[in-house]
Length: 298
Image 1 (tube, rainbow, N blue to C red):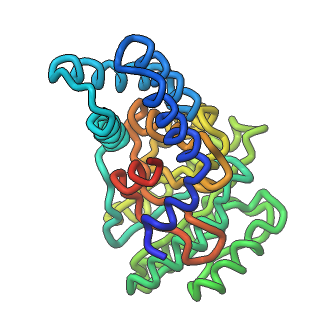
Image 2: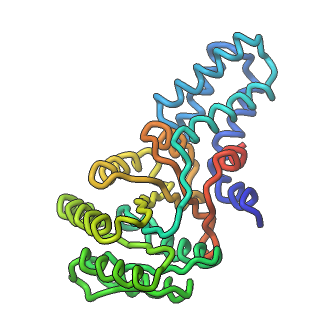
């Protein structure tokens, strides 16, 4: 199954929420104020933010009036293009080697699974990969990560529960430099109930990486559970303020009808989606493609 087919499958709930409602809208409404108000409602109900929705609909309305457009397909294509432009507002990102990728996010969003999938993806692209078990707080976190490392056939650097996360990162960097490893993926804790301590820990890990391996390309990706919808924005802002984020990894898109939240999130915070999970298996992660994403929800 190709990426487009996978995306169509995982985005079924979001597509049903947008495409079906659009068809109903065109069936009963000619272009006019009532049409555009309902179009706004459809986008907002798919969790595109109010501010971004209003910008998108205003652009469509302005173009339609200027061009004297009344054709349904033309308006749909206008909408698609506006959504593509909006979600592509943040500059796309390509991982360059040698790379250190720090994975952050709250507990339960799929960080461990995403790390395993990413490691496997990089191996398939002929890269040497090491995983660093930087979450030393959660019981069995490193054991769960070790299972995925084994599946991806990559090395894992870990320590005992309760160890200093930055010390584990230091050891992982030393090992990767010695072995000239292409990609180091660093897991982190996600215990937001003690967020002050967590953020200080992440800042320390960030400093260690920059100090010990300044020549590496350093990326910080947040994993977001798509079922969280617009509430994910507060998570992104929190981590972004602490360490600065470079990209987003989306998981659990198949479980929500509100996949539209990522359109406004990427636009308003200028952080691109880099990878998207498309299933439960180790191969089910893909580079994000804005055009394919938008096409998959229509």
